[in-house]
Image 1 (tube, helix red, strand yellow):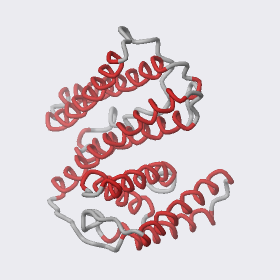
Image 2: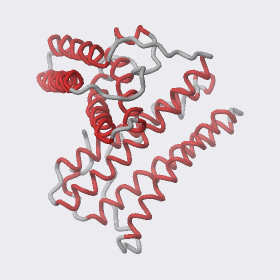
Image 3: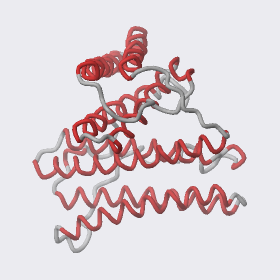
Length: 283
């Protein structure tokens, strides 16, 4: 991930929380601008979508502020520069509203939250103190929850806009992980850049390990992996998206804590994978 300042150089917990607050505020400002634009273009339906996203981000910022105040930080510390490319409107701010939909808006928000999740796991992995590592892990867990919430909203918008209620079982979880591994191996075999090939093979290995885990100890949770058409099997990105949705649902619905924990861990791995797969497929 490209950043303006290496995240492991965060000097203190106060600085980390200040950075978290700045990131949330940037998202709030971005969605507010989009809401105002939709209002000015007489699309109140889309303005309401962005208002929903503003409310969601304000809730996130409130949690950061509560955490900061609970630690006795009376005023926000000076935050370092925000990471590049975390909040992106992906052209929504300039595209014709006739080409925009609630589904596309929520898709953009999902990707923003996924980038934030990946960033905080990156901070945690390179932290120079236990305090920073634990705080970054907490932020990553929060972002994973945000991803799950927005993915549900995106799925609802997809069904509403298309008048569909797709709920087809297109294979067992081990079958789907096996198919994803095949896609990743195929991409890796044709990749000419060493760094990308290494990443693809690493994600393939993760799929292999998830497959072995699922065979050895099946997960108990929602019966259907996701509400996707069968055509999703032919696209590594669509298949990865489907599995993330399923594992996030499992993380919130599983009766057993161990299954819920495994579901969240599997989703976390796949969110990192999606960032690479989007380079091979249209979003």
